[in-house]
Length: 160
Figure 1 (cartoon, rainbow, N blue to C red):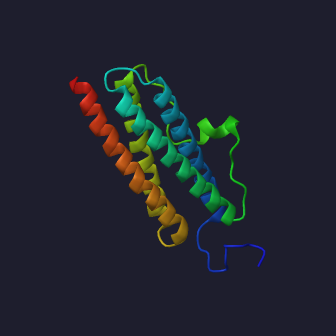
Figure 2: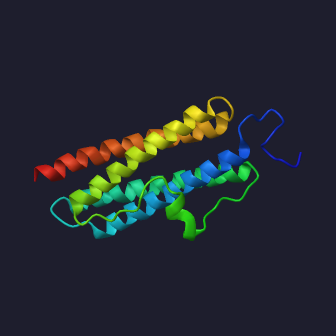
Figure 3: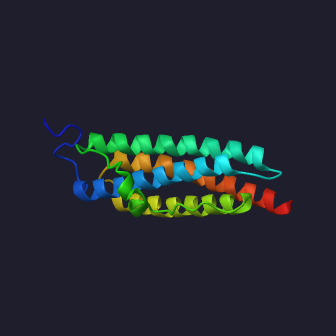
């Protein structure tokens, strides 16, 4: 009874899963920071519309971080928000980008990395932890939308 959501039928490698979820948490935090920086630093002809996309994506990445942190707590552990290790645990890098086109490209690269690594997590989990799998699948759906948005913005900015 003292293990909360972790029942006797729980099949995932809980210790390994928590480490993986803390990597996902770090990835989402890095994405929030990158999108926020890009929001404040965007300049140029298309900056205003692109800034709004950056801000929306930052909010959605923050929601992902909250979902993951909540799941870690449900699994009986404290989420790792220590800033000293966030960049090291993250699947994607924090890259600033020197202009609007570079910022969009960096965000697209990060989204593609998240999609790939999160898809691996879903395959690894299979049916061992369907709740976590569904959370990660929901995050992937949004990350794919973000990648599509960034791809479209990159094309738009490149044409001008």
